[in-house]
Image (tube, rainbow, N blue to C red):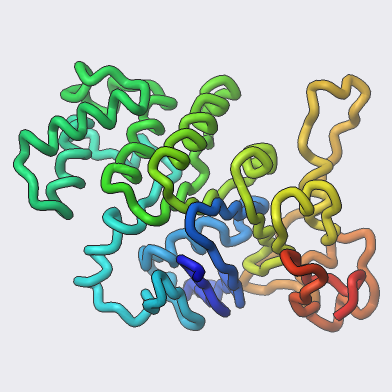
Length: 318
């Protein structure tokens, strides 16, 4: 039984300049204790997809179609009062920028205490002891529980955000760019912390990132998004060993490898399309060296090639 099932999800932003189709017909499933990686360039719709699962799409965005089944219940049909009981308690989220996500006027311990007391019937003293224990598990001394966010480094603030998401042992944790703006040493520490905590808490995880290296280390399944569309979905090992879509191949070629001294860095020519006026047919075709006349006229369907793999590309049928 799947823990989360997203079907035909559409999320549009209604702006004065026009209609932005940020997420267009996206669907996937997530099982218990699985990690799903969502990758793609900036503007591909990754973060909007994460916010959609929590029903936190900022205005002027709206979820206009599809369904999000969590534990066999459609979250899109639930009233806001019921959703508040699910957010944090059953689905936690690590937001992209911890400095703007944490309240600068609240001590870090108060953030955790408030989260626990909002969902559980405990005393403030009990919640504080749990907060101290959680900080220790995050590698932060409990003596710093009364410090403010600005007194911590970027890596420590990100640890606190991860702790907040896991404070109530949720079924799913959504991590939106958890290592953005961190140096490579701290990034490696955060990745190892997430791996360890996921194992300890036995949570499922949705990892949203543009960093293909992190996805390779943590994800069981990978969704590749481009301009609001799913280009490919695959188990992690197969995707890295034999990517199908030209866009996936280009992303993998852009990962630098310090062990290959003769490696020439590659990049994807051109820019992601304007989602108000996206190109006809396949949205990647203006940047694809394999584009055919059919790619300009028709949008390729997402077809199943192997039991765990689907791709939207006419090079593979459809």
